[in-house]
Amino acid sequence: MTESVIEIKHPLMQHKLTLMRCKETTTDNFRRLLREISQMLAYEVTRDLPLENVRIETPITAIDAPTISGKKLCVISILRAGNGILDGMLDLLPNARVGHIGLYRDPETLEPVEYYFKVPEDMAERLVIVVDPMLATGHSAAAAITRIKMRGATSIKFVCLLAAPEGVKHLQAAHPDVPILTASIDQCLNEHGYIVPGLGDAGDRLFGTK
Ligand code: URA
Image 1 (cartoon, helix red, strand yellow):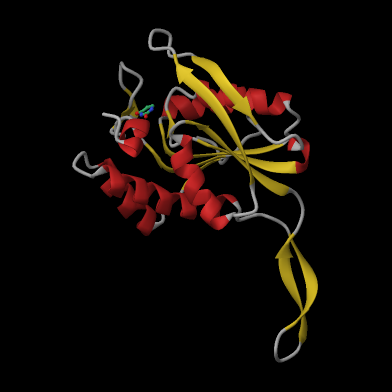
Image 2: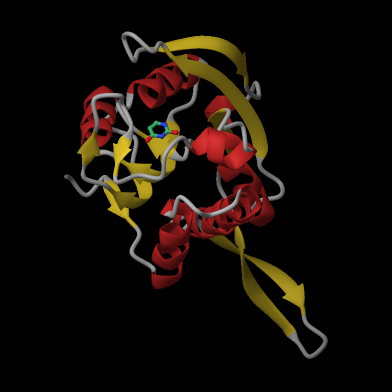
């Protein structure tokens, strides 16, 4: 793995991730934990945002104090499980614009098929954070990023909860300019395209559909 993949080893995040992996964890707890971890992922993915000083007055004195400058943010959720990360990200980044991309995996080929695409117009002006809890084969993430680039985005980061080494390899090969942030790089994919040990189907667990 190259340094363009960052595995965040914060103890709080690892603890919450373990709770998410447990098959007994209820839908409401799963959703809350993903939201909490996503707030931490938002903290990490914005770590290198540029700052500029502005003149302010505290009740005591005037100072030059740092504020975020540079590109505005856009968070793009890969439907539907991406919405679980989106909620936590927006807790921390309330001014970010939001886009959605609908892709499903063809069960035979495991290739992504697009059914929805809606993103802000000024993509070239923004740092784009693409979110999906599970980086499995990497095909959906790579296809989503290709579409986003076609809309003019040049500054893109990918954030997931779990990544399979296969997915990381595929995404890096397709988009070497896009850094990947994750809470864990797991062992492998199984024959059904699920991450091992993983946490099962993130969308089903998030929305209670199974
Ligand atoms: N999508 C999921 O929800 N889980 C996996 O393990 C892989 C892809």
